[in-house]
Length: 259
Image 1 (cartoon, rainbow, N blue to C red):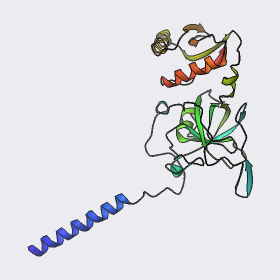
Image 2 (image 1 turned 180 degrees about the horizontal axis):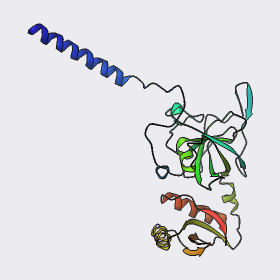
Image 3 (image 1 turned 90 degrees about the vertical axis):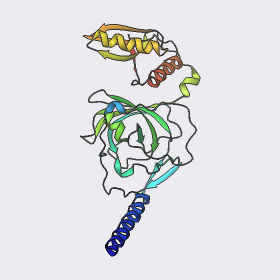
Image 4 (image 1 turned 90 degrees about the horizontal axis):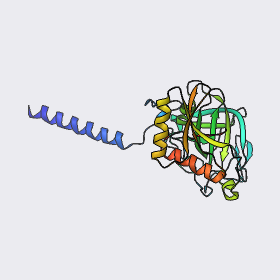
């Protein structure tokens, strides 16, 4: 009986040591990229919040080489706007350092670009469904010539193309150069924060924005929808500040319209 108890004790100790060793060991990384086992909703992924940042210490060239090809980093993101194909990356790179040194988080709205300075904030629009997301570009890629940007899994989920793998997009850099110039805008420039079939839904958003200290909000019926507008704006700096405030409140970045 004593012998059996000793064997059982040793067996339990071995199992405990093995479990601790397994827990302390770094998790194995998948050989292939893909979506995480933990499924999330698009609404769980928040826009990146643009803010002035110095260039990252790493990943800013002026040139670098991948697969025998040399790439040049742009001196500035100001005025950058491009249309092309976007892909996405996920579990294979989750937790690994990006080119700028930040750890990659597949659940955040980030992206990789071959030549924009790191970091650069950008608004990415899915040209097939109109969905938008603001990302922080902190990584290099994609290195396929037929693609212009590689979004995080979360950002791709926001744009609705995770299952398809790629999408036609427009990428527009958000910079702070124009803010210093305090550029004037046409008198009929507004931000559109939402469009609803229900008037009550539009009024609810209007009240929430006003409660969040967003000024000059109104609801107007247009083309069968109740649209929530903010404005008008005379200066670009005021428009950008208001758009940033809407994002801080947890809503998608409103887009600029003329009324």
